[in-house]
Image (tube, rainbow, N blue to C red; front, side, top):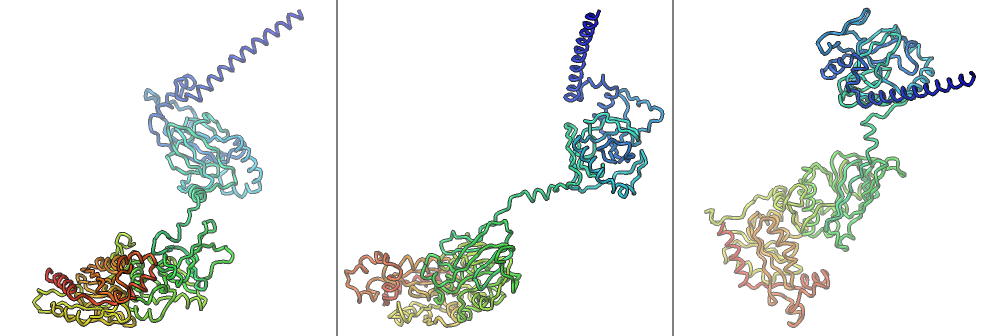
Length: 632
């Protein structure tokens, strides 16, 4: 009997195990179906209300939301004292019948309908429980203004501002539940409260932003209480990599290195430097430039001071220099050292590039000059006044006073193109050489914008002006040239302007001419005062100098809108025939001597010869020039 008893117990134990396995498999299957196919027909067998749920999912329902404030004792630990409920009009069943209303049940428009509680993870609940215990001393004061009566309600306050502790939750339509004030029924914890996308509401003392996406259900853990999260815009700005500062200087041009920069700029005159104050995280830059557009000429650039352009931070050691004067206009810095003092270089190296650089500022610019020579400022005063309404700033004088001038924008050095030429496609403002000559005529009040017309009925002769030279490349038969020009039908005259003459007087004299004749040299720079359409004749000395004559004056003349004639002398017209034997390489192969450098060329071929023009050839040039006016 005893053995039978034990055998029966073993048999019952085996049946119990088998039953447990079957029940466990069934529960696992049901759980799997619930989690993977929430909309399958199995719900119809589990809940009689699923048909109504399917209808509400297919029919848009305008839900309302209330904040429920039950008593603290009636809620499980870990939940806040507030929770959200959804209020929706109760829908009929598939046959159009309204569900029966039990005794004591709220009406279909009251807040107790379709309530969904936001599920919190156990970790969050535990953290909240700890926070509540820690805040017990503050609870009475905090709850003094709240209604602690079970079932009490208040309207939700909408706040369009997303607070740092907001939780973003995506929710499908809610499942109907019927909670009581004292207890909380989690009928379907996987279903979240439906709200219009972008809606921000208050629940449990924190802000929640709810987005409705019917096809997906996503639940996010709420932030830990007491820890503020960085808002998205601030986090994006913080996480964005530091933008590198653009290069302050451009060293790619063959004539000039130019620095162009904007920001908190301090010109430390004593150190001949421009300091740009930047953020400490910005990569440092430091450049040295000589603000004169002949960077390939070491002899010239040795006469130009070096300017430093660098960055620093406000917290650096030593700190940035403090401003002694702040300017509301940009600064353009350049040198009038180098080869200035020669009218060709005055214009080609300074005035033409300066106009190209500062034109965009319409006179509202501060000129900062190195190597200032007072006589130079006096000579070109009218042009400088047209370029800037502000008195030029002498860098050396500012350094002597220990000044620091501050700007928001600065340019160090000038944008130079070719000799006496502004190329429209390279100019920042689309300028060209005729724009500069027009500026010159306006600044100096030169009256003529066109040459004389022979057919205008006034009987005036075209005026021919010959530039006289007194030291080198002298025209030895200048008087005969004037006589021949008169015989050809011109009113001929000689120009003997000197470097010290006022530019306005020289400009007025040249502007009166219709034809300008001169030997290759700086005096031909005066052609820019000619009216457009006038003729310029360049006499080129012997020695294979055609290329440099073309580059320095021929191409610029055509760019200015002038008619250009190049007269290249022969051996018999050069005084070199009296210095070298006829078989010398200077006559047989002069261009090979150019390899000795520009110094040799200048000393031997330019300054070492004078010219006696062939009058017969010269008459042909005059006829060509006269024909230009007969054709007008």
